Image (cartoon, rainbow, N blue to C red; front, side, top):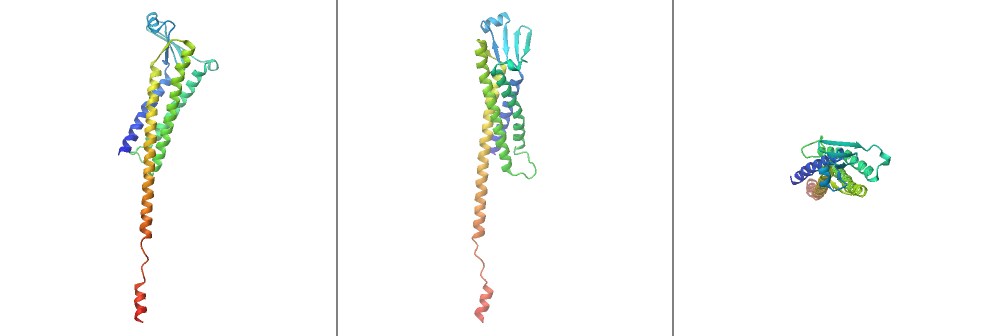
Length: 219
């Protein structure tokens, strides 16, 4: 029961984290940039936002973005962020699917519990890879943007990526650890049962031919 609750908790946390990674990938409010300071730029309507896909200008009643289409001319931190965030978003889909099909309430024929545990471990490892992609991207991007543009502040998308990274890291650890423990416990239980049955089978001595012995003694 406790293992099922842990698995369900890990699944829900991982889904929320993956959703945060997807939202951060699709939006551009990663960092807010300004030449004079954030308060001054807000008053002058010269606040800018930068993300992996576009540079945006934020002003009163206006949100204008220019797409970053020159892929070869982009800095390395933008290209790396794009690649890692797309990879994490894609890997999250089969990971969530495998974890969902490994839940205790779902049975695929006469599938043994060991196969479910292995599938859960594989899904947890994929979730950890998603968390690693999000961690590298959400740390490297603001560092690169600060080195390129100077003064800046963190945006909504970056906070969403950080929350998604933490959730996927926590959910992947829960899924991997609880499934590993259940696999080892079930294996030890099977070994103990095998030893018990072999001992019971080998402990019975062969029956003596009492009838033949009585006939030979009578003769």
